[in-house]
Length: 235
Image (cartoon, rainbow, N blue to C red; front, side):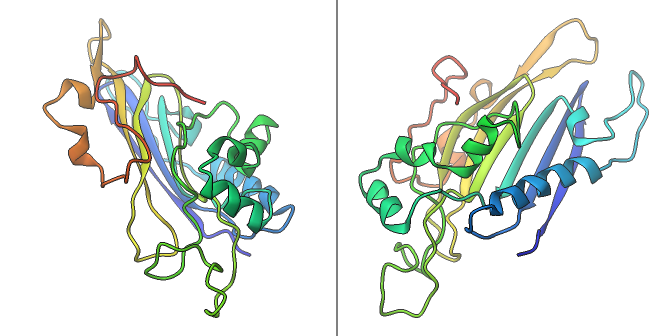
């Protein structure tokens, strides 16, 4: 199993720096594979460097963690530490809480081994991997097909770090072109103005956009809150 790689983008809006990281971490569902994924994250944080640009007020960030607001997304490949049958039964009961208690990413975060201090929104949708081709069935459900059985898992995730970010929605799409289901999120962000005298909040709720227009149909897995931070709860 090989670490697939990552790509990072750095940008500054007024006096606030943003970093977006997209990564495909090491695959595998054997015990201990989560440690390889942890190592991938540490390697990305250690090796990613941005060219320094000196502006009127300050220089641009050189590393990922030097940014004010960070969003990390992609196929993080963390699995659920349960058997295939146990996961399938809990998915059918829509018992996301029991599944998340065995989610490797949450376990590694609680242990302080990866993404310490990072945030992720509440998950109210089924595991996003692994599906049969062009199907709504998980791989291995149909024993007549010759395909590898994989225990369903939330491999596809969106995390964020830093103050001034609020997640308005966290849902999955239902595209069938892959053995994964994509995940989507909408955030509001606070941005420091140039004159340093006030904070301007730039969010979807303060624009003329309808958040529902930005997202795919979510099949009722979650409700979208277009009114800002007040009704949001985070893990």
